[in-house]
Image (tube, rainbow, N blue to C red; front, side, top):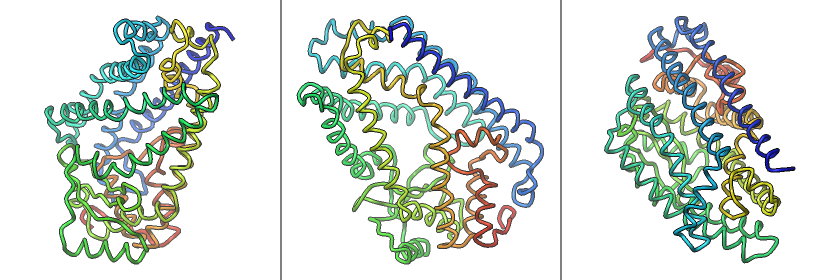
Length: 424
């Protein structure tokens, strides 16, 4: 296959990805707008018309932003590829960064920074206009800028050594370099997962031990009853940036901890918080976290194998605007093309994730009661202004979680899930 043919295939897949995504979003947009003034029958006792209209308006606003951001980002990327822009950047860096590995790492860092700069207007609009309009944003420009700088610093501190390590393996370990690189970088990622709650997350948020009291006692009792070991229960100052709420587990082994957003603690009853935590424990007990890690390893293995197959395919490099083969060009091309070339796999990954969510919901219903779990889901949906009327094609393709109506229907098979009004 010639370089021109490779480029045409990439453009075709990128265009198909964009058009299909816009089509599904259009279906979803039309469905949400059509039902914006009518609360679905299943929620008329638990969601007020005002709450439903706010959720619909929020979803519509986010989709309108997507109608602009997705085409802009895709078309700019395609234009840069066709014009040979990325190859020019690589050649320009080679003019004053003469060490091969450093030039390669600098190139990957530069294109990452350029991508962030191009998406910056959309990020700013989303945070300081859209989220603020609906009462969710609480961050300041200073905090937002500090987060961005910290993220950039982490990318350099972590990304630079990883890139240099990858390039070293590509040169020093023979034809099976990709196996060595896969093994080494997988171990590094495991180490980052262990270190994340202790070293990385505190750079962005404050984590305080949950104060002693009824909730802490009941969480420990629940964890003990479910034979779940953790290093601690922490409250995160999520309200510093947003009024959205959540809870999660992080870390591995002895660093594993429960994290509650302070907004969640403020919004929910103890029974509801316990149900949310039981859901997260369900992911752990059902081995969903382990399965996710194994899937990530499989995908990483396949990615490194593909790198090894493409490394010496000469037409690949000019197809994307590079003068010749280079390590950084190979890695960049795979990162650039992997999304468009695999977009059709999205529903399979979404369905796999939804299956895990159903299992965790059932676990939580059995551990903390279907009533508490149903009430918690309703409250999370209300406080986060989540869409109650997604188009089925859109949710099938993109949703990693079942819709609220689907989750409540599944919970009803475990036991009674009464519908409550706000404050009920």
